[in-house]
Amino acid sequence: MSTEMISMICTAEKDALEAKRLAEENAREAIEDAHIKGKSSVAATLARADSESVHLIRASHLKATTEAAELAATTANRIATLRARAERRLDNAALLIIERLT
Image (cartoon, rainbow, N blue to C red; front, side, top):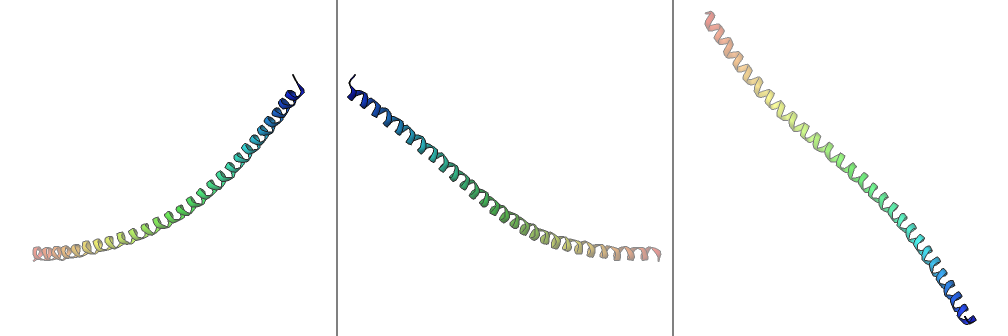
């Protein structure tokens, strides 16, 4: 083999090693960038989830409070209706007792 051919082979080997080194370096940087972007994405998702959970908790408390007030009003109305009916029946019962005694 001629020295020129040996020199070309050596140059090609050096070029190949340099290309391999650059490719490995680029791959390491790409992996590092992906990890950074992944961590950032996870952090953003967690922050959004925290915000949404706070909103949902507030909304559920508001709904529960509203429904409790509605239930209390409905219950108070039913109590008043039942009490009025019971008082009417008590008056009728008292009249029936008086009639039987007299």
